[in-house]
Image 1 (spheres, rainbow, N blue to C red):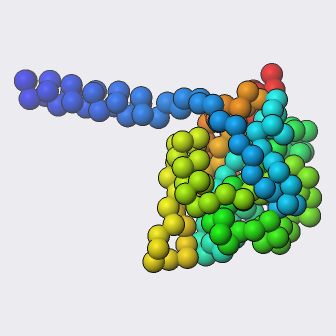
Image 2 (image 1 turned 180 degrees about the vertical axis):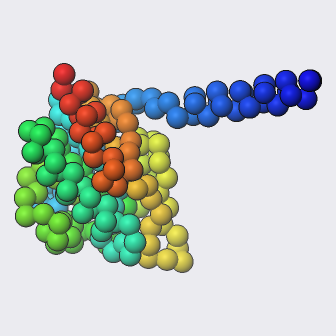
Length: 187
């Protein structure tokens, strides 16, 4: 009987701990200004009062970045169908390679309308790694032995007050949840 009770208590404690770990907390994104694909300064000042989605990509990515970017383009189209005004910000995690011109060429593979999509660069590798860790609670690492960069594959939702409120996987299965959460921010 004691053994059964002990197992039950351990299971309950594990379950409660796991539930607590899944709770997302909102946190403010500190002011920033970087350079977009059009060689223009872009940052938190231009995003004030707006809902925006963010992600981390790089143009020479051999795995997940092309499907992530295609997914973001498709999600943007769905948001437009719903008449939801959402800015998109993609931070390059490989700024030594991803110049504004390289980012401009990359985005044209996925959309011919980049008006509300800003691909950012203009910082050092150390700066983007620190920015991602401090502002988005995620890790970026560029190993010396590879031209590939380790980074998050999440889409981050930031509210009108500049707070990151939730993050999602980039797959199509998350579109409805993202759209519903954006709608809630506009209520």
